[in-house]
Image 1: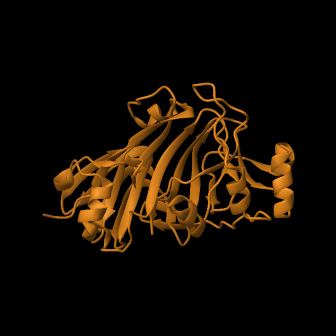
Image 2 (image 1 turned 180 degrees about the vertical axis):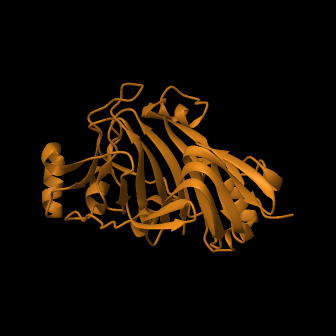
Length: 314
């Protein structure tokens, strides 16, 4: 029996800032304010489940624990990546994530480096990406005095934009944006500012001011992203980032392409269009909203169709 691609059922998360845009991916949403689709998740706060083949019904975490050969027998106490699609109907809180050392020491969880691909957005949409403080003392003073307009750097966005967000980066996704996020497998977030919003019970949401000041990179550093474009038959492959934590590509298929999966694993999220994957004369259909994993040793295969995919791996 040949190695199959493993398709996953996502986990959905209700968020105060969420909406219903994820319906456009073909999902039946469980909430009116669905903020997050956890597409590839093996975390205590959410596990995606295999939909096909001999591992049907198992979680990604169970595969990682008991079928490590699917991931090239790489080491680690947890599956390394978490892939999400986010629908920001409202502004997300301004946040910063710690690095691994700080996260493990203070939260018992990894830090978080992440990246964003802008799938869609309203005209005029923007993100918060960085800050203007030159010293940690200035950062603390501006936060405590609420000088948000002076402190926070706003960046306009458009569909197709990509942002690398290392730990220590002050950031927020603005209203009217749908993104695909690739990140370390962590759920550690420090909230710096939340527009004085109240939750469903009327309470102000918790902030983490001292932790945020401690872990923010000062002065802010904007990582240099230089996308590299290659082609494989009738597919254009844009490599956005190759970091210590993940490599992320966008694949634009217009016809057919012969490929070879020779890494420990690859995660594929279909963000537009449809097509098929052919492996050893077996055919697997995929469409917008599908998420499939190509295991270690998958080898040669062919893609046919018209589709856009975000692909990540170590």
